[in-house]
Image (cartoon, rainbow, N blue to C red):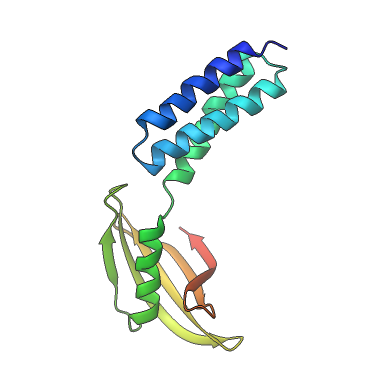
Length: 150
């Protein structure tokens, strides 16, 4: 097992992570690539080919994870579910990823002695991109218990 190709790839990816990543998407890509490279090298018995393939696949997966909702987006969703009457939308744009969101509660009901709301979320203008159900936790936050993308 030759550890040098793996070490070189990990050093380059970590340097990129430390000095070049300003967004969650980039961070997810680098973390995914680093993890994928390590896993690929192990599978390929230290070979550079396995590390390279693992880095590419891991980077793609990490990029998708980095594009997910951040804490600011979750707060906006929580506020819409807590305060908006049924049918009233809340809209915002995430300054970090440039995506725009609109959340609209569509129905309110009780389930297991806690308030729940069905909602729809439009992402980047795609109507009904996500539909889901959320219920309020005992701490006042909303937990998404069912979600489907279209």
